[in-house]
Length: 252
Image (tube, rainbow, N blue to C red):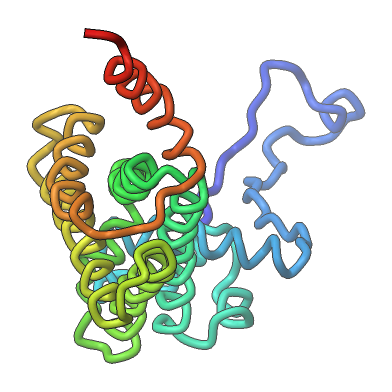
């Protein structure tokens, strides 16, 4: 609801100076901003406002009136972009899901050194829950999971992360698809669960320590999986190998 305000000034108005009667000015109502935005920019604005409301109030308590007001648009404009509250919620959820998946994929591509790649991937989960608290609530604490479309999208988020890890594990290890996928499911599961526990426990240790602990757990299993060593790993091992060879070759 717009608030009216009376504009007063200690100086006489032009009407008074010209013989007019003071007091005839009307209260001014701030006009709604009708700035036309490109469709993509308007959609992003609506998603941002909706994310704020859904994350703070939950799906069921959130209203389209409040979301429209938060975005500074009329309800008809909101409905032009999203036919229903569920459509809007799914779009907001998708935006956060894509952010999570993008972070994991980027981490997996950041290096060819397997342990460093594992560290980066685990950090991606911790970074997401730490930095995108709205996304965390919408994906992992949603009150709309009773809706099949929401549940499907949340489950697909985990599957997409598993697929990204599976592609690398199967390529680097040469394991059969079933074993490679079991490893991927386990890695994503432990990363996701530990990241959520760390956040819900109010960050009892530093993020880097939490990530290192998770990596230690995961690498303890992965290190026993046969895999193709990357060129980075072979180069890292070369100095110690040469030193060992030199020591063995020295006269007694």
